[in-house]
Length: 254
Ligand code: NAD
Image (tube, rainbow, N blue to C red):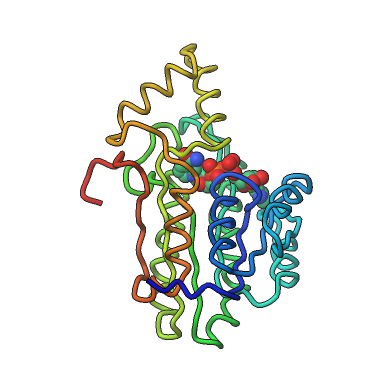
């Protein structure tokens, strides 16, 4: 299989830790020119120091000015990985209007703005890859992730529509739906749930794992493997998809 990533320019948003960092590392290992963007300078420095030649740009994906600056500084982008932190968990009645608006900015508008900025180059060179990091919640809603379950569906609708529009220019648009993956996001979701329910986080984790056919959490690298594949030449005939990497937790024929 030919990945064809040598020298390709790859921008990973929110790429200083978790799934984003694992994705950046995966592209770097196959010879891509990797740039990562995230908010914290210390985490960015630590991330690029382990990837010779990679660059880092500080910025917040919810800030439209930061996104414009990130893309301008990164230069022409061949592969864009749209990633961000997830919106907070909460039952419907506990989520205020401002939180809905903030989650739209974080989860939907960040991807839209970054994609808008990179598309002219991709279309002009008739080669481009947009890879969105989403959640298995778009296939099977995750209890109490009201914001995430709802707004990620908008990302899916946007991505599918865009795939149709940019396909003629050989730009592909795909969405990855991770299941429970061992990152800071899961630790914080379990800690919050433990606080609210009075059940220990360890016990909650055991209950979670029991629902996963592969009986374990995923590793960030296992999500990154699909992101790298979809961002490569090897995935040249794949577009408009939403693919789970979830250990089998989605129970329907997704
Ligand atoms: P993580 O918390 O480990 O990493 C998220 C990264 O996003 C961090 O580097 C953080 O600094 C960065 N970030 C957050 N808000 C940002 C902002 N406004 N601007 C710039 N950077 C920002 O999370 P993760 O587990 O790697 O998750 C990545 C995505 O995958 C999230 O959207 C998450 O909800 C989703 N997801 C994760 C899991 C899981 O089990 N870990 C499952 C399904 C979906």
